[in-house]
Image (cartoon, rainbow, N blue to C red; front, top):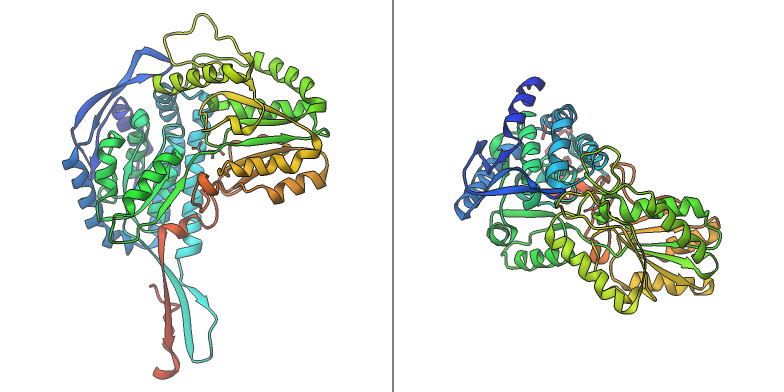
Length: 510
Ligand code: UN1
């Protein structure tokens, strides 16, 4: 059994953190070098990463494919132990991971700490679920003289494609799930956060996961994405990112001779509905956190707040007051609430959205940016009043909160309008009337519904996370059924009567 040394991991990791490249078959390969710049301060170069070309991608797929049979038959206790080791290593190395995530991803220290925490939780949760689901075959009822059971195996090579906004948790969570279910992995990190992702891979390897079983392919999505997605050796894809990219992945998977499953967690047009009974201060606190934490760069973030005419003016006044209290600035300072957005393109899109909204909507407030900010991609938290949800045609991925006023007797219409966006990720309700909360809950087609609290930061194993419709395929990450989609099911039926009645395979190590 491979032992790991915490001190060794620290030493090796700090040597690796500012340069990364493809990790195939346990070896670091070269590629075309890219400089990673700190989004909070463009004069700070965080490090360099070697991006893969076609040969390296082919090498990764070949390695993962050859490693599959051995990994598929590695017993689940061992797979779970590696993931629990990984959780310990992630926890132990959190300072290094947080520092990379803050400087490369522009996330605040609090967000980066939560990102490590969630990655640790994913590893432990999927290890525990794998033991529950896959350790012994599940006995099924059947007639006398027959044994029936259900057993699970990995599918093959899983391609894991993850976003920059949770470079530790989502990156590690997808991989942990795929490995726990018995798949080998080719992991494609987000371009902007390749260094953080590489550090996670290094820790997973140190935890005992063999090099050929987990391969890492940093690179430009539009270049290596099609090479990965069209390869016949891919047996499944886990993806978190935009709905548009999920559609494109689906189209490419449709070209395969095999039916290749896609587990997608995509965007949202997330709303919060307050009624006249809502506790105003609680509502304002929860709306501000949900809309502006992580600079609004969460798929779960609040985008549209529905306020009843009766209380809207008062709540808007409180919201502006709360926005004035937000500390915007260097994400590396512990007191900072709002850091930069990820890059220039994201900043330009947000500015273009505000300009477009100026034509037919009211900009109620923009938090002033502190004058001494360095040259980074900062965008001020912004409050915009619009007439109806229909004015928003796409997901606005940043710290912009829209307000829509409604009449209490049109609540049903509000819910219909939210459903009509086609997205269905998160929804917040603020009401002290049980019947109202219940009605909204039953009518709303969303994956995660939060009542009288904020609507971000789902906890692994406690609030399984994922949407419906344009927001994703399910099953929910951090939920009891997530691993099943990464596996194939085999039903075994044995005619025990025919061979003397003692042919039970159930108690054997299958
Ligand atoms: C994402 O932003 O891509 O509940 C998904 C939350 C997180 C969202 C992750 N689990 O806020």
